[in-house]
Length: 353
Image (cartoon, rainbow, N blue to C red):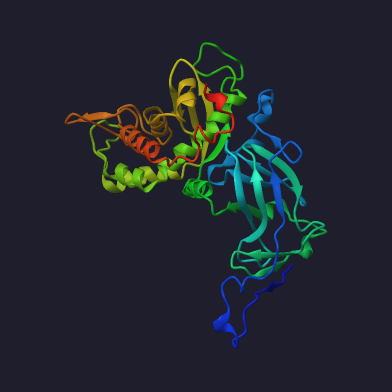
C-alpha cells in the first residue's frame, strides 16, 4: 500500500514573500486531554493488584515515559509513566512497510495527568484522514480507516516544546526498559526482599528512575566520570579513558531494569535486578542518593566490591569512583533545579511524608 504524500510549497513567483508559517499546510491534529476521572484512569494507585502493577504490560522504555502502545489494529493505550502532569505533547508514529520514510504527527495531548492512562481509537478511525509528517508534508492515512494498522508495524514517540518535556527527552540516550517487580513471591521473611512491592513504592520509583536517568545522560556526569580514577574488578588496575567510556556506554545501553524493594540492606543489584530500600525511595526527591544508586548500577554492569564502580576508593585522601561522581552531579542538579521530578510537581506529596 502506497500512501499519498503532498507537500504544500509556495510558487516560485511568491517564494520571496512566503514565511515558514505560511508554508505549513493547514492540517489540524486531533487533540486529547487525559486529565480527569472522565477521560482517563490512573496506574499504580493504592488498592491496584500487585499482579497488574508488576505485569509485563506495565513495562516501559525510560526514553518514552509517555508510552503509546497498540492494543489491536484500531485501538491504542496512552499512558504517562512519570509521576508528574505533562502538557502540550505531540505523539509521533513511524509506520513500517507503507512507503512512509518520516515520522507522522499523529495527535496532540493538551494534558495528561501523572500516571494517567486511557484507551482511544486511532484518530484516523472515523475522524480526520490527513496528517503531517515531521517535515510538515501532508500524509493521507484514509487507507487505514477500515483495516487499522498491524501492531507490529507501528512505533511511537513523543515530543514537545516545554522545559519538562525537554528534560524527559534527554532520556532518549538510554535503552532502559523499566519493569517493577516482586522478587519475593513466597513472602520469605528470611531474605532481603520486601514481601510485596506497593503502589506507593512504584510511584516513587518512577520518579527516581527518571531523575537518575537524567543524571547519567548529562554531559557533566559523562565528563566527570571519564576524568575519574576508576579501577576494575581486581581492585588495583586503573581503567583507561576508552575503558571508562566503554563502561559509561554500557550503563546507557543497559536493556532492562527489574526494579524492586529491599529490606535489611540499602540496595541490591546485578544483571537486570535493581533493588532499593525505603529510605532511598523516600529521600531521593529531597537529597542526593547517588552513593547507593550508583553502587547498585555498578553491580548491574558487572563490577564487584573490589572495584570503585561500587564502593569508593580513597586516593590521596580523596574518595574516587562512580558513587562520588554521581553524588557530586546530583548535588549540582539539586542546586541548579535540573531534576524533572521534584517535590513541588510530584502529584502525591504525601508519598514522601
